Structures are given as C-alpha cells and as structure tokens.
Length: 249
Image (cartoon, rainbow, N blue to C red):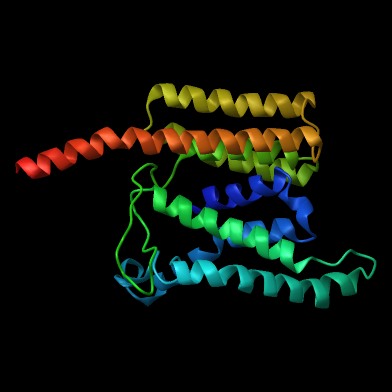
C-alpha cells in the first residue's frame, strides 16, 4: 500500500488504545508501519533497481522478524539519552510493550502490501517468489477515509493540527475527485465522508484524545478489516474465471 495507508494504520492502532501500552508506543506504531519501505532508496541506484529490490529484503519474513527489535532498540536509546534527559520525571518506555506494538505494526505493513496487486516477496531472503493478495489496489481511498477520519477526530485540537489536516483532506480529495478511474458515486461518498468528519469535529461530538475517540478508532479499524475481508472474498470468482480460461487455452 501507499505510505499514507501504512501511516494511518499505525496511527489508528495507537488511537484505538495501543498508545497507552507504553511511552513512545505511538512512535513505535508509526515507525513500524513504515519501516520496510526504506527500500525506496533503491530508486537511487538506477532505472531497474526499484524493480529488483522493492518489497524484497526489507519486506521478507526475516526482516519482519528483525525490524521490531531495531525499532524498539532505537526508541529505547532515544528514551534514555534524549527524552528522559529532557524530562527526568517522565515514565520510562517499556521495552516489552514497545516490541509488541512494533511487531504488530510491522505485521500490518506486510499484510497490506500482500493484499494488493503489486505483491510482496514474503519469503525473502530464502525464496524470491512473489505473493499477491489481489484484493486491494495500491492506493485505496476508503482506507484513507475511514482511518483518516478516526485519527483526525482524535488529533485535531491545535490550530496547526487543523491546518495540517485541512491540507491532507484537500490533497486526498483532489486525487479522488480528479482521478478518471473513480466512479461518480464513489466521489459523492468520499465528499460526504469528509464533510461528515468535519461536522462531527466542529460539533465536538467526539472530543480529542477521549474514550469516545478511541471507540471511533476501534470501529474504523474493524470496518476496514471487514472491508478487506469482503474484497478478498470478492476476488475469488474472478480468480476462478481466469483459472478456467487458462485451462481452456
């Protein structure tokens, strides 16, 4: 998936309650949800480097097992040498909790990348085979809308945050509204969703950083999980049709 979807997944998991697991838990979720995409730097190596390295070494099972320890170690060093030196009274980060949420975030990254039609080399470095879920496109606006709305309602108290969210909703809305592949009905639903989130925020129906905001984030996460499950199931008839056609040919 795109970096926005990965980031919103980590943020939504934190908003749903995992941020309370430990100090720096939200950082672990956000970093873990994006860490494997460090292989985007392969684009600096030439025209075919991205094709050769993307969704390979940094996305395989060995990396997914190692990444949580790297993320946790980096955050513990930050906690000890920077965060608690600046605020000696701050509660220390808990290593086990950080490791757990980082592992969950890394698993979400691998799962989302597997679900789309680009695929992932999940068994790297032991096997270079690609695996494709073929359930979601690389950019899925419904993930942006559902998880983005939940995180927006929980983190939009300050004027600077509201300005940043306005840029986010403006940019994503332009992409959805101007993309020729998006049906008219989907554009209507998107605009209705963005307006509804803004109205809920303006009315104060979901106070920021509140228990209600956590419940909204949980509901959004469950809704996206259900959406993904339906999409995965819906591909089965098409997959069977392709298999029958291939056998006939």
